[in-house]
Image 1 (spheres, rainbow, N blue to C red):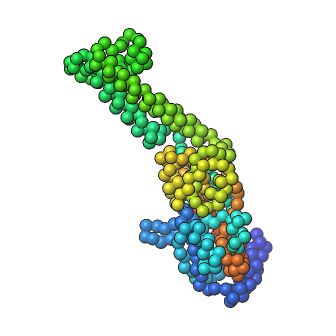
Image 2: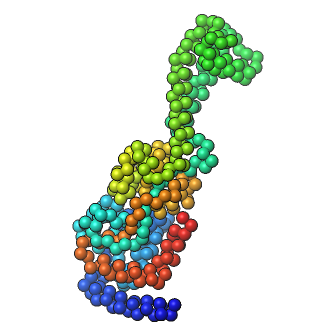
Image 3: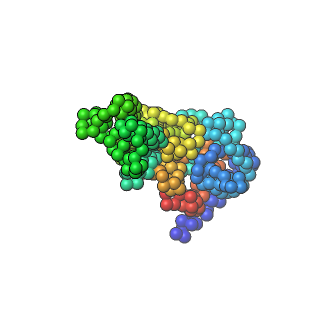
Length: 346
């Protein structure tokens, strides 16, 4: 342990001696660009920036004795500003891909991957979409209305002594006649009753078929959402993904029906509202969301492993400085402590 500590101390001397020399030729006050991605980059109720990436960059910049300012923008513009050299670097959960490496230099920060989020169906009791719920309500109201009309049509408008019992008999009788198409023990005996029954058959049976189909469909989705075994199970499914991200590029190769959103929170809402089958995105933000919201869960799979990194313009002298400082921050154990602070328990 002593020799390891001594080695790190000696190495630090050489590291920061070399880094200081490089800094003479590099910027001392740099412009940084970032985009919101919880829990990496976000703001508190007072508008102050926080998150894993913010704290990490602040520590690394302090080691390099660099002052900085951070500008917030979207993912696409963030990378474009760095590529054009208008910003010194970009931070946050930036995936290092082959396409991006052709345009920018990167310093690896954290190994990660993509994850899949689905609705938390608990014990797999079926949950229904807003459309199905609406259909069920309309079907129920229409059934009650037609039953009451049929009841009065068959009794010449006579009001029952017990209103609730009469309502029950009217609903029961209507359902029984509908099931037997008028050929069972109960059948319309008056012309008015036959007219109401005919109108009911034209309206309520198609609606019943539509509602029953959507109920079955929702029950199938409930079961299959909890049994995704790999990312290829998303093929042909409607999946929400944040646009202009590496997760979108990865998903396109699977053959899923992609729904693009500007902010990942929109994808979460689409999933909760049953408007998409799943959300495909970076694993750590999905894990963080599932810990905060018990309506959603991740499948436990990590696909497309890759690294997050700092993005620099091609040939930037800052890249080497940050690579060395980040290595020192890891060796000290501070990187692991910071990681545990933000991601322990996920």
